[in-house]
Amino acid sequence: MNCTIWTFTKRRRASGREESAGFTLMELLIVISIIVILMLIAIPTANTIRKHTDEVSAQKSLQTIQQAQSMYAGNYPVQGYACSLQALSGEGNSGPPSPTSAQLLNGQLAAGFKDGYIFTITNCIKSTANNSERVTSYSLTAVPATVGRTGDRGFCVDEGGPIKADPAGGTNCTQLVQ
Picture 1: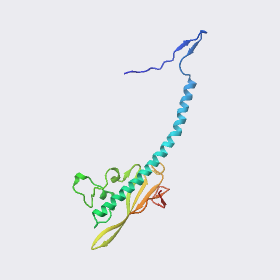
Picture 2 (picture 1 turned 60 degrees about the horizontal axis):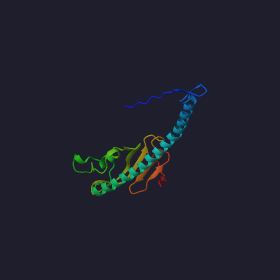
Picture 3 (picture 1 turned 90 degrees about the vertical axis):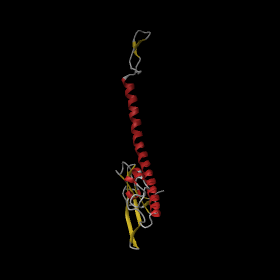
Picture 4 (picture 1 turned 180 degrees about the vertical axis):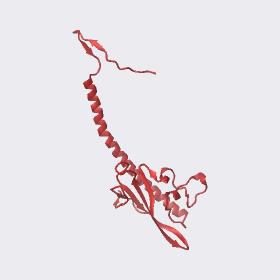
């Protein structure tokens, strides 16, 4: 193992006076101050970038859930859409897909939490035909776990509709996402 030890040696000038070959305390303080200033600039920028990345991930995750809902409705037309993420999820080794475990979502998204956002399926509207209930409508929501820290905006989407945002971070989505 190679260790470097910083030493401050003194060297003699031609005039006979000793001169330090290392850094002065003032020089070290200036360098440390510059590093601190750069960190104060970089950390808020990094947090802003991370929040933006989490918001984009939430939008993509809503699209993924929306696609899983379309596949679910096609695979189980009697049930219509799923009213829970658990119905869309499931493990492949637990048996064949079923209306309660369709195996269309996996990982964090199936648990309802991903990249600082909480995902839910709400407002399921059922209709009765031929003595069976069928879910004909739903809403998906993605809200930040901590508004301002994990994300600034909440997102909503209905079956087949565009993604909308709530600038306050809730589920009152009124603005179309570009």
